[in-house]
Image (cartoon, rainbow, N blue to C red):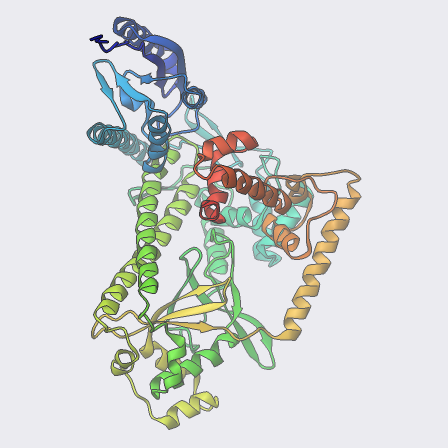
Length: 630
């Protein structure tokens, strides 16, 4: 009998060496060469074949780095068996989402992560767990370092020292640590103050006036937001004021040479406070006592006075400050459109009419509807986790100098607002799921726990407009705790005050259609603005980019894009990154690729279409393209 023994062939592992430092100083002095020497020696000792050496001089928290990108290209081509680094934190201090992506690329291509003396196989659950732990500890170590840097910067500020980017009206000498007035830009603040206080100009008009004189220090157009920041900045009357991520605000006077007096600054703040304010404390409005937030960004919406028509003010539901909100929808709703449908619900609910059922989704007999609610709740949980990851990265962006103090605070507030809304929504869903499973989410439960039962005469008086506004305000304050407004759906969703059993009853109120005449006038004004913009482009005599259009137009980029969405693509305008046509074309191309290769990674799609991976991920999520592909 012929016996053939097993033939064991020892495969020579192909290794890609990856080295990284965070700063140019480290590169020049010792770190990269030291890593290269040690890792090359180790790979030779193991008998591995060195495919290439990849290096980066950049932060470990960034995925998009030249060296790492080239390394992943080799991995996806099947040219690598092992990625060797001095320690895993050289390869990654990434947030959870990016780390999962990096692991996925390595795992799909059966590539291991090696350090001198240890190899991690990501297809092994234990090895992957320890790699996750190392990545987490590396990020924690970096945050500790950033925290120490933050303490140093706070103490430096307490001593009256400035650092970072300074207002364009000042020059800073880092050698002598002195601040002086920039004679070429010192005219800006007195001019803005005069236009605002003496000539009573609005912020946008001031920006337009400045654009007729000069561009900003960065050679860009002035905007209303920039004018507002100039008016709000205490540096121009000498004060150094900085807010830090730990919540501390440090104030030191007499640091900057003054360009306006403190008295002028206080007058400006007083006038800013008078513009676009909520209705006065002594005035009544039916929505005044209800906290209303924007469903898109989570910021507070307030009731603000508008035009004076037929002996009374029109009131609008708007952001408390449109100049600083990040919200893209910027709602401005005439509250007359809310009054009638809201009163109709109150009457039906308080008198126990069966028709009130139409406001609530009470039928959960179908298991599929309950399952969809549970899936939505899990998705919200993930979104909350993602937001916590985003908050972790904010301080690093600020301390690295990539973000200003104002941008840090703005982004931090945005994320916290969104997280607060998501958390509340998550808690509401959990309560609702529990009630549904216990058969407690019903019309009988809704009617049983009404807190107030006014008589029919009182309701009729409100319906006919015979009762004072204060009565309607008090009634709604007793019925509702808070609300959110969704601009895209024109729906105000109010939370009923029913805490006896913690039942989360949300009431969606669909707004009345807008006044036809006013809408027609608004539409024609928008059309005229669009035509003026088109004529402005035509006068240039050539194709121009959208960025150029924003510079020469008196309107904001948001307004120009909104007009374009309504009336179509501007002629003689290059297809820029934000153009509708280019976006549609890219979405179609991504869809085609996913239809053929449903499981292809975003990185490969980005490479094939010569676009950023971030944009690919954004469009896939925004248009749910992977769902369609499957």
